Image (tube, rainbow, N blue to C red):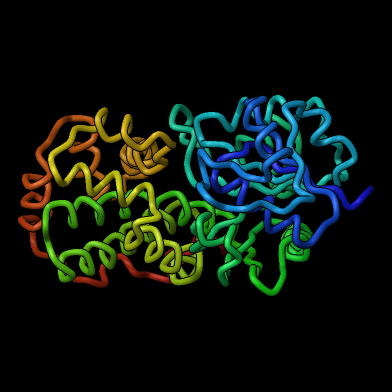
Length: 346
């Protein structure tokens, strides 16, 4: 195998990760369906629709031919939107070789099946889920492409695959940790987008730091509760994929989820918000999935539930906040049980 690495889908995050890889490897190829985007990347070394004013490495090349992108690559990094992941993985299956490392950096669920992205990819490639690596953590594409210090985590059921992904990406600007809790890392990365929507909505409503701090804290408890029920290690949610990514996504204007939530809080409806964004807001689809997942597992997710009503049932955001504040009294630690996870894994 050569030192070639392929990155599938040239959105903001895919382009940023390709730029990291181009600092480490002589041949990095970015795949896009859009011929005009391919031409811009190859000739101008920019991707202005997704990363305005960012200058891309000259050794980063683009193509609209997936076979050309993947041929001879030692690793394939998939950064497709969750709704497109199955089709991209299906297209990849015609070119993927078993010796290739497969990493995905998409934070979401397949809403129709409630499956994690690693499961979707494994199904389409016809391989064990342990062959897939998931990347997550606090990492705004706008900062990564400028080589701002960034730290992420990679996780796989197979330790050697995670270490290989760590070696692939690690450099002086991009630090990578490994984690064996693939389920927890994947769930944390997806579910924090719901809380980021809520944090943006809180800011759009004009509430202060008290409200947002409470939302993030109780949101993390909510994520941990469903995560443990689905087999994740609760400690993962205190790490980069959990609290780290939650803070970054719920407090930054770089965050599409925060911006979308802010507009909702200011009175715009969902269609208006999505039209103005021009890019995928994963938290919207994830809220829909979380609503169904919470019912499937019988786990309360009150923040996700209220956001579901705001997004899909036209509930006024202020009414949603009143519903959260008016819930029956609870004890804070009723769901923070490490024993639950330990019993699951005996």
